[in-house]
Image (cartoon, rainbow, N blue to C red; front, side, top):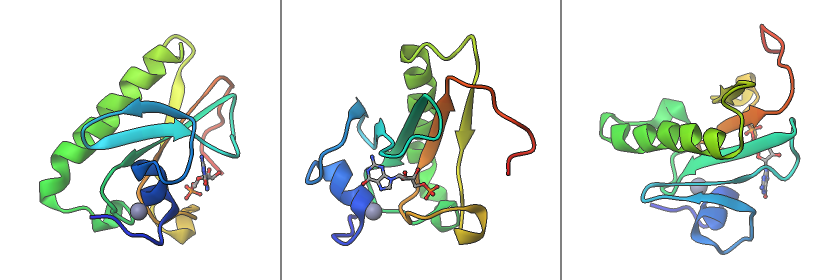
Length: 116
Ligand code: 5GP
Ligand code: ZN
């Protein structure tokens, strides 16, 4: 399912341009327009799911591919040795601003803990 009013659905379909780094069966990934680290990639399901809270049990294969894609992209970007951060903001209170589930892959700098 796609949502024509959703920017990430339109990026996933190719209707809106993005700097694509991964094209999978259920998942695509592209560089963030406003990067928060030297490497900042968004990994998203092709299907419209607003957030983690909306996932269904049957979505396990999508989430599996999401995480494995992030692993492969991190390797390709040369981030394994230095480390990288994966972030899933779920809900406005956690900082989610685009309501199509997306996994942030951030790398290339030092990260603080706990996150802000
Ligand atoms: P959130 O704040 O929802 O966790 O993350 C949304 C992310 O999407 C932000 O980092 C923002 O920079 C990025 N973003 C928003 N609109 C676009 C867009 O049209 N293209 C790309 N490549 N990234 C976007
Ligand atoms: Zn969407």
